[in-house]
Picture 1 (tube, rainbow, N blue to C red):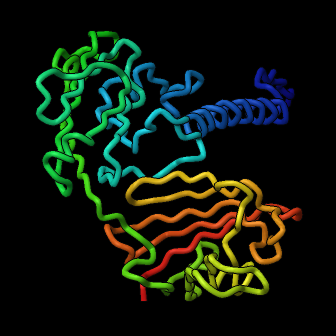
Picture 2: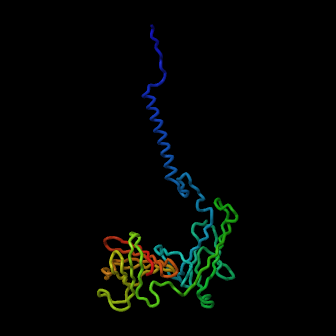
Picture 3: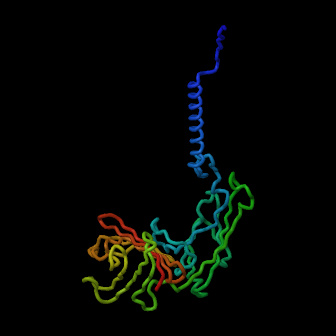
Length: 304
């Protein structure tokens, strides 16, 4: 029998497999970078991301204007003075500033209490001293801000071109104090942020007489910090820098490496926030700047 020869036009098996592998790898690479692009770049404010939106955060007008105690002609606070926002004031002078993030051509009109004529500008300081003297403290004063913005590529709805908000500021002569009514000490039970499950007790003293380890009063002592069982607040050469409003306070010590550093452990800053409108709940931070490196502690506590 004559043997028939057949020509096979199909590629060899190993050649076909090689092409399949190459195609699979190519698809994997495309899929990988496509997935990475979607998962790793989801910032609408970033022009490099596929979901970039040039109007992100610009479609609405921000009406949350800023208020803080007035400067009264002195140097305004620096960046480190980052206080908890508060609409209650112990001082009669208030600084008003326009909200962040609005178009540069937005204009601002402020209606202060019952004043006949509104005030204009992105920022202004108002002294309520005469009004409070004549009408008394412990009262609310309404502040209305009206913002006008021309239509643009992001603000397209006419109703968004004119928006307003009213906030009531409260003026009081009753400050929140850590120690009050003749108290010389106070205790708080709570925890430090770096060990939230460990309960601790901190005690704060204010001594007007006597001495502590050879240092004469007056001074304040703190008991219960991790850095030292008993610690003295620094006595800086010159006045420390103080930044405060009704609910919070920051004190920066200009010379943390003073002669009493053995008692202060180079404390360079301390701050306190009254969580409610009394001293029952507090948050307090401490910063130390010894030569060995900066240390930070944050305490949250309830009055005992």
